[in-house]
Length: 303
Image (cartoon, rainbow, N blue to C red; front, side):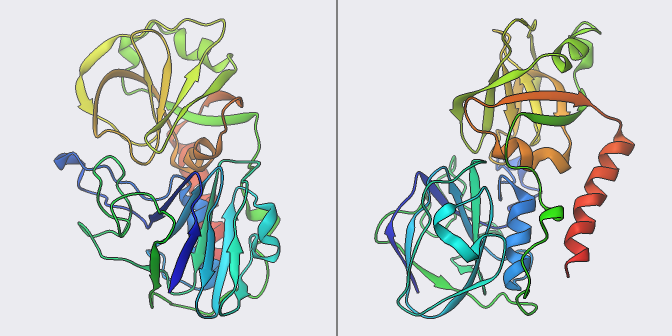
């Protein structure tokens, strides 16, 4: 068992989520930074859909009742030492403190075997907006106890994850996007002007999305017919602000979407901190596919 001695800012259980349920109003969910979570599970030898712990800004303190193999990826955590981006053994009775996270916003703690909480609609992920999953239907709190599962498929990696196969965890951020789907709702010059503007990440961010200010640029936002939404959709509000959607995004929306962040850059979007600057750069579908294959290849190369 694992005891939560102290909780962090927002600490939750996540696995690969609930794809295919958007038509019922249930977001896919899963890790906001899918790549770092996949690496953490790979490091400790877990199956890809093993549940792990997502940490935001400040991490929890945990007590391990038996020896476990762990790994921490994503945003750097100074207090965890040898567990950053490598498999590490933590002894029985040891206390593991994940302090302040950064640069980057979110870190991932994988434990060999995965976190064993009940499946809800096919996933162990916490759905914060629905109040279900994650074992307790909410972020972790002091006194919670978590069981370790048996979702192991390989030996833990002996070497640290190569620095050349990690994503940047510090801004300023360049995020690649594909135009649309609502390009007709905007003047043809708007995306070009947006690409030339440094957007500011505001404190109004959570697992649903990131709100961005565009100093010096007012976008003419317009309401659209209610339409399905996806992670990465960049909505333009009626006041001209931007909302870039993340893992727990609403499944439908009424704001026009000027562009969509490519899947390979969703981890970067998830790591942006308040006060960071962000620029969007338009790419083709071919370039987006190439970027995805690059990250998938990094995971395969380290098998």
